[in-house]
Image (cartoon, rainbow, N blue to C red; front, side, top):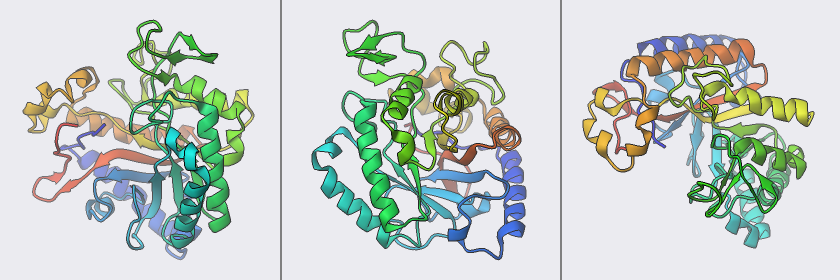
Length: 337
């Protein structure tokens, strides 16, 4: 999902620049590798279309995500996402060899590795098959072992789980599971909370340094609490990550950080000069999610402030997604999805 960035961006810019100044004062004498976490405890990151985009630094971000080798040492801390699908299991050892070699090559250029993306979905960018938490855990543990052998200081982040909402069905013994022919299910996917429970039951906690999650705000305000009317029956809101933390920490006794490897709010394209996107087929199912540019800016600032004040367990938060258009200021003006 592509999220047009704030056109009315000054509120967010002021907040991030202030944070970046504080981090520079705190850490100017330390190399990037020695500062895997920012001061204060959050990492302020972005999913950019280009890791060389000068707007990353302009906006005060100190982390960026890449989806391939960055090519050179970037002036930010780097999270690299690697593909991990059901098909990876068929050549797991060879994939592990490749990943270990990459981690060794990039030991001085990549601080953290995210293993896969939204594995609780059957989409091509997710597990690309009916999701299976135990199978994903096998891939995650192979990745963890290989990366740590090549670079013991690297941070391994599990794939960001997709918020699917509550699924009331059980399929093949998996709770919270949608499958064709089961209820109203159009495809295969699993409630992120049940997928997490199955991951942890399979031993995943031994194979990540931080748990990945995608706490998108959808249409809810940033401060809306899980279980509130503003979040709706599916808890589609930013603070739903609090439930994820509770499952991990209280139900399973796992004391590890969570990284928001994607988060944000979808701006109304009609308000940022992209009216044609409103009726684009790729966008039509997301009308209910949109907010105004001013709301988006306000919610993003509130999200960072809330996490800093209330979530000592939150690590890096990577806004999705971002591109700098010099002639228009920081704004994401892209194909509709």
